[in-house]
Image 1 (cartoon, rainbow, N blue to C red):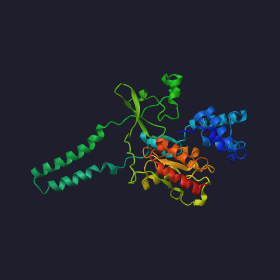
Image 2 (cartoon, rainbow, N blue to C red; image 1 turned 180 degrees about the horizontal axis):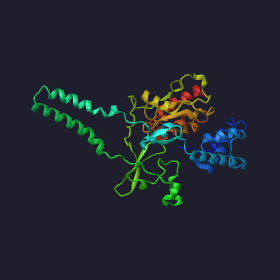
Image 3 (cartoon, one colour; image 1 turned 60 degrees about the horizontal axis):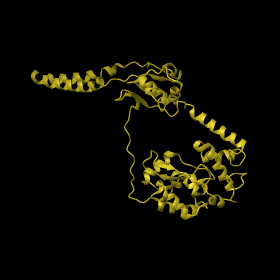
Amino acid sequence: MKRKNTEEFLKNLEGKPSIFKNGLDRRDDEERWESTQESFGESITRKEWERLGKNAGGHGPTPDSDVSYEILMDYVKKRDKTKSKTKKKTVAELRKECKAKGMVYDAKTKLCRASKRKKSPAANRKSSPKSSPKSSPKSSPKSSPKSSPKSSPKSSPKSSPKSSPKSSSPIMELCDLKPLEELGLTKSQIAKYKKPSRKVNYPAKNCCGKKVIGKDGKTYVSKKMSNGSCRWIPAESKKKPLIKAKSNRTVPQFFDAWDDVNPGYSKWDYGTGIEPEEEVVTKYIRDTGKITGDIIYIGSGYESRQEYGIIVVDLNRKALFTNTEDFYYWNPSIADDDDIIKELTADTLFKNSKKAVEQYIAWYKDTMM
């Protein structure tokens, strides 16, 4: 839910201190940000915009100024360039790739090579001691008719089921990847396969029935579909079930989780740029049995914008929560309580969270103001 800056909203910000060192006031900040949104859309976030303003001149950058426009354009270009760079593979990922090829990783040459280790004779003798001692003592004391049925069923069923599944399942061959330019693809097709978002930067039809190691270190198989085309699918496609809330609550509430997700820091550390890792927050939500719609304060790495430290629990997401800028636009320092409740609960994200929003307002006034 994006808020449009109405004249009444901007008028309430007149005379309030700017978030920038050399800024005029809060109204000027919002007008500059609105102008940036019109020119750049979603290619630059509010956090990035404020960080640029504080690092370059101490006022909010705006596309209306030639200097500010160049700063914004340079930032977006450099950021997109760094995102497109491929991440350097770790040693663990390189070892996994070599293992998939049936080889080992050489730390000196940093390449895959065949293993120098020979099979020990003890491994070959593992099958013989099991068969000989069991067959000889049982066959010698007893008569031959009884020994033959005992020895034959034990040897045949044990050997056949263990060996048959391994031999029957074919070992999938690793696809030999060639440069995209040698596959006869068009420029647009090559650009499509080189996108950073793709897990496998190679056409599936050129590796049908074979496997490759994706950019994320996981194995992908090119599977032939019913229509004759080939498609990359993960080798292990088992999906983990979504977490179910442990709590018996049905009404979402507000929680100040500062002490739980930021151990070692006191309440006096509010606003010092402390922010927990995503895994810590996910574990907290899982362990404490939070439900969808719960509003939680976890802290923000943005010192002057602790509103960014508010999250909403969503158990249908992988991380079990989502961030939202609604709390920046609708915080009790610049908006009325009734307006906050009315606007936030109108959003589907907070449709059942009226009580949680009311608790959030009371907490904000007591802690942040």
